[in-house]
Image (tube, rainbow, N blue to C red; front, top):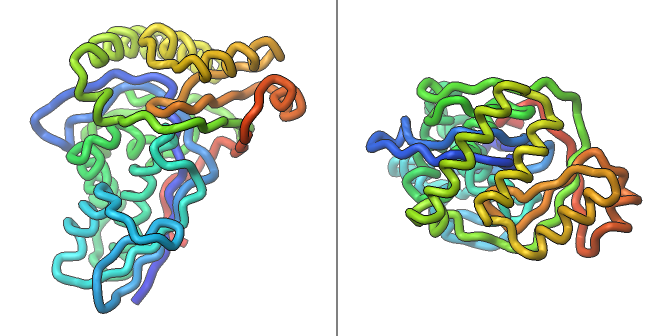
Length: 282
């Protein structure tokens, strides 16, 4: 048996870390955007268990956690096609965990519900310290406001109404999520700023305000790198809006023409659109 599933990328603009002894209730508050690019995973039964990312065998701890939780003693080959940079703030670990969970469920006829699979992917992220809120966004689509932390059934979300807006992003490198979310100094800045940004967004839930507050959060927390700051300000000089993806050395931009963006920045410019759908089988 084999099955394929797709999970979209997700960029968090700002967030607040919410600790809890129960992984299903742990997560983050904040807001982010879901993109129409991401990870497609094919699962098939085989003679041994392994995980491949773009044809290369990897440890992929978060996806492997999902395999351990769901496959039981079955031997499964997990092959993921990754269309996004890993570790750069595009929710790759969450997309990998989700697409793996949904493909495994189908391939092994496990008969679990959407919420059950989403919860397993969420806990995999929390346990491996690779993310706190991407899975919740990837299970809804659009511009997702995470009002309360946790997995589906525990967290609470709302959405900013938008169309398929074009998003550009420039990925320059990785930021180790685990180091940031376990640092007491970083957490204090993040939580104070994230709480304020969410409060302001809920008063005016528009895409423009999301972009503005994301930029404010990136600068206020001092998470923004010098390279990212230069790109953000160059985009703004061309009349666009930009901020840094949390958590990665990646700038995402909107409300700007591609020709203007190319004048403003150097480096590889990738593009996608806001996706209104969530993780699903193919």
